[in-house]
Image (cartoon, rainbow, N blue to C red; front, side, top):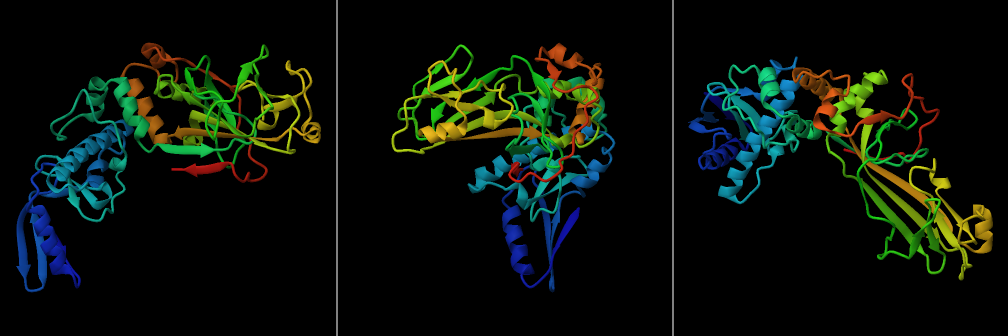
Amino acid sequence: MTAMIYQGVDAEDHWREEIARYSRLRHPNIVQLYAIVCAGHVYATIFYDDLIPVEQFLESYRHSPLSTLYLYSYFYAALTDAQKYFFSISSKWLDRLDCTFWIRHSTTQFCAAISSNSSDVRVFCPIFTNFSWKPTSLRGLQWDAMVIASVLPEEFYRIVYWYKMQSRCFLPPHLEPRVGCVFLASPAELPVEIAFISDCAVEDNGWKLASGGSPEHHATNSGCTRFGSTGLVGTLCRKIRYRGPKYSWFSQANYIFNCLSIDTNESDYVFIEQIELRIHLSPTSATPPTGYLFIRPFGIAQTPTRRTYWSRTANGGEELHPNTARRLGFPDVAVFVTAWGQSWDGFVYSALRQFHQGKGFDPEDEGMAQHLGYPRYQLSVANNYNPQPLTKIQPGLWLWTS
């Protein structure tokens, strides 16, 4: 049995609230009330079973990133079941931040207690839970062997994707990252693309005005997009999203890292899922002259300042310098590129290495990617590449990290 003692000026009120709450709950993944104690000014609740803190239970698996990561997802599935049950009887959602997490000693079953959360357990992540294999007990399992034998690569990649994932949004000041590529995005080092997928599958919504609608435009033989200057005002927007196999990077990340001798700060390497380009047009005269705005193909221009130019000819042969274009009355052009992506720490890549080895593949080659039919990554930099430190901090590079 496990006892919880209530102290302080509101101890009795808190104790009575807990009794009222737990008396209604009957779910295997929520702690079960066994008895109550009221002796003088001592108030306590007694719960069934000896409860082991989840952190303590996980200590025995600390040597194995593979088992630890799968257990997190297993715990999350149990927590989700408890939350659905709690909502069904109370019409309130049980917030994971209002719980502490335990393992029942007799059954090794995960359970939650409703109280202030002091745990750092990563069951807080929305981890994939629809497994082809779900153990009925945690007791005595050789987790590494069971996960390797029973879990499909795509299932494991879904777990990996959500575990300690950091969403990154940044403004690359020098290069435009390609969707589907992997990009070094560290505030301490020059941003650079390290790997990419050729012929990457994308969803491109084309150029649209932020205010709505799509102004008339044409593709040129050079690959540029041409807009007429008449009525062209406001902000042009374009979003490009990755639509290839979602977990391609996981199947060959350690191969790319090995090629480039990367074994630290793995969370600085961001898988780019979406790019947004915004071109803001600021009028410089009441009536701009007749002409054309040309936008170069994405991925060819090396910096945002070289992405666009004005021309007075429809073929774009006369490329006007920005100062000349302004003097002639064409709108000023400001280009903004924003990249969204995800990154993971070294723990995740260690789990991937362990999983691939267990499945019979060398984690430092492309065997798993070939087996799954995933598109292959290619190096964007030389094998002897070394990140270059920034000589000064670049303001505005990072928008947010979560």
